[in-house]
Length: 390
Image (cartoon, rainbow, N blue to C red; front, top):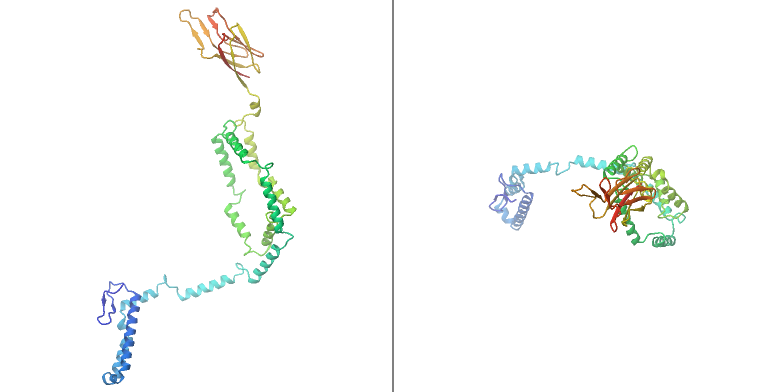
């Protein structure tokens, strides 16, 4: 910022203790002094004769010395600020540091362990050019175009690929299957299995850390560093790439790789999978789905003393009840019971039904028997429901 005070004649800056020194202000003062000095010199030249009569050589010398005297035109504070600014290593780099940095850069550039020589780079470029142009290992444009057409036709072949409608239906079926809790493990079991798998994946004795693996792969593939067997291996991997080559040997290698169960699964995963499949506590025996262990049915009473109801199997346990009727009606005055609900097992039954080899017999009694029970499991027109278990 400008100084607080100015000189009276040339209006030069005069800094006080609280003023902030500015190198631009100093430069402008120097330019003004220089221009003023030039003007005075020109005037003196024009009036040389007058100068001899009015100004003697000693005065001229005194004036020039005064103008050049920096101690007169530069304050002590300004000198200190300039010195501090020049010595500030946060702004300026010392000559020794610049020299040391230049030496390190020269050593880095000449380090053969980091940089390839121009000769090796040119030789590697020539080798890659020859490899790329080798028509015996790379397919020509016509072959690539034909292959592209074959792939396009393959993708559109509806005999191989499922159309979107069927895919959507299949997805819905899979969603229903996935949500079926009778055949899938509950959340706790799945969480436990997930933790086991997570622990397995984190086992550094079996798996390589992805970051380490990525670093090794990137380092191996860096042709700017390697010019030895690693580079040759990369070239071989490039040659075996089915996307740009079409040899039978490549197809066989890829098929062998895809079908190799030793690298796509491991014993731990196989054991977990087999254990999950064999767990009968979370899966239903398939035979039970195709051959149910229970049977639900209904019949209409015919009003006779008895009616035999056929079942697919002899029941080990049976429940029968009348629709919209109270299971048992009791007459308070006589204590007589009319039952419309009954159960039976292999060797016993409640009043109203009797198990048989082909099903069961439903009974009806019009009069109360000695135990004051009237059987109402076959009344005319009444709807009855039952469930039988093997």
